[in-house]
Length: 153
Image (tube, rainbow, N blue to C red; front, side):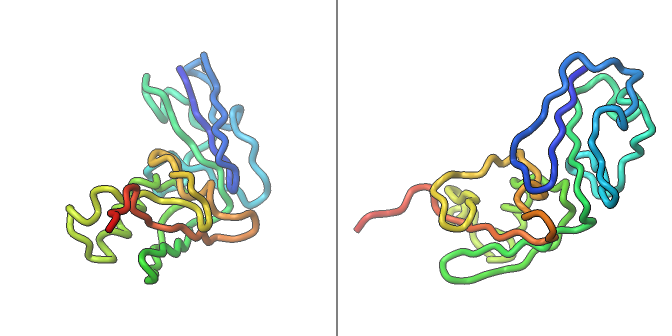
């Protein structure tokens, strides 16, 4: 089975191929004193003494190790800002959806919106957890919600 692990403030994913179902999660993770392991898209702490089969069944798994229980995300759009508080394991597609709802944007207006780091022109992967974009030592992140295609005229 395949397990993908993410770490705080590090957008690179570490993939563990061919993990035995009986492997304990603890064996795959590097945990510092205050770190907590989360299954992506879940807000509860992962039992790192459980086996990968107990946690994920026979499907690939995605885990983030992060010291924060919540990330305060400031999302900027067209000169306005909203603040969203979410677990470090929340994928960016969900953060994007929450931001669109907070800005009260219609489906039409939101159709081409993407998340980027402030000052960047690179779209962030929708499947990445927000925790990888919180700088070390903080439980905060800042993102820009921008249109992929800007109308000319």
